[in-house]
Image (cartoon, rainbow, N blue to C red; front, side, top):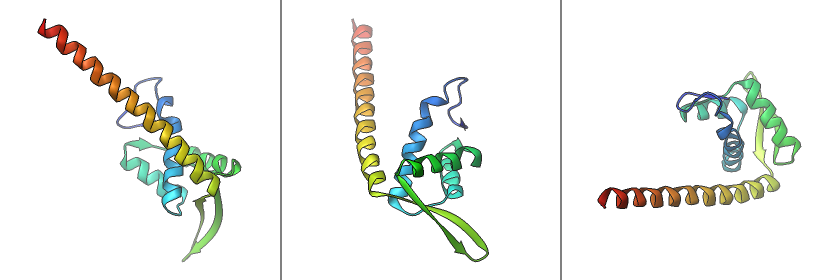
Amino acid sequence: MTTRAFNPEGYQGLCCNLIHLYVLHHACRQATFGLQIIEEVARLGYKLSPGTMYPLLDSLEKKGLLRSSEERTGGTTRRIYRATAAGRSAYASARAHVDGLLAAIQAGERKGRGNQSKKRGQ
């Protein structure tokens, strides 16, 4: 996975599992398909190829977090993905953990800035 906004050499893996979480988030909100998610994450600054997205969707389906079906629209057949009950539960749990981690990071940053201000004011 490469990103447009965040691409320091060797650090791409920091966001990888968050993309899995984003896919689950999206599938919990509405039925979706691979290209739609690729386009959405592109708007967020991430570049995902079909060679990354479709194995990710397949892996989430094999874990029972998504289910898919083929739907025909006009002349196009798409594989549509929806979150399962297990997927919605896994998403809610993971989201709570990520929210907690981000809150801890933000609290640590605020605390760090406070200590820097005190040192400058001495």
